[in-house]
Image 1 (tube, one colour):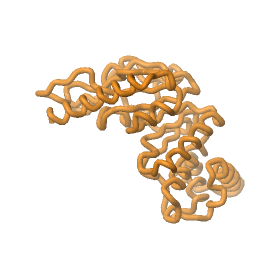
Image 2 (cartoon, helix red, strand yellow):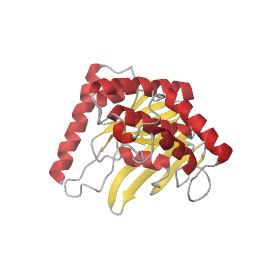
Image 3 (cartoon, rainbow, N blue to C red):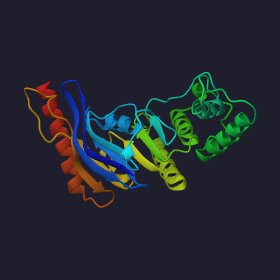
Image 4 (cartoon, rainbow, N blue to C red):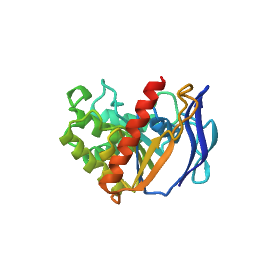
Length: 261
């Protein structure tokens, strides 16, 4: 479904990602971990279509990923992408409206009623069926993230992109969100890419763990080389020693980068 061929991403002279070669089958759940600034979110944006490759190819079903977001790719950020002046129901309906042709994204008549019905069904799926009349300011952090997930799902995407979606949540709420995302992944038959700063979370969710890290670093030119995928591991088949080694590698890279800067 997704394939990268010698993929590079640069901003001017700064190399963020280099030599990415990978294949992802439909229905996989990929978690991405790595030190801050190693290109995890950049790769997610390339999948979304808001960033383009500097060289190499990033393909969806054998064709270049469009250089703009589309309904086949939904995204959820750590910072809740909701409209504070709209109710929960209106927020989810707006996601459908913005996916339609036209400037305003307004819905009328039968289209509006269909969007309302679909939004209510999605809200029930994510556990917000009784909160549709509330506003984002009245919701807890976990409820706001459920709302953001509902927005992303309304377009019926094939690919769900999660950019550190649970980083600001308390541990108990995060565990509930893990259960929700795993259930929705299976129920909607999604292909999921999830960035996380928590190595343990990345290891225990989904089907594959990718570790983004730099394999080469020039102290005199810290931006000369980018990160690549140093580990591509099946989740659930790694011993504790491997987990500790990855953690040490990432910590060492972060320290070396800080010294170089």
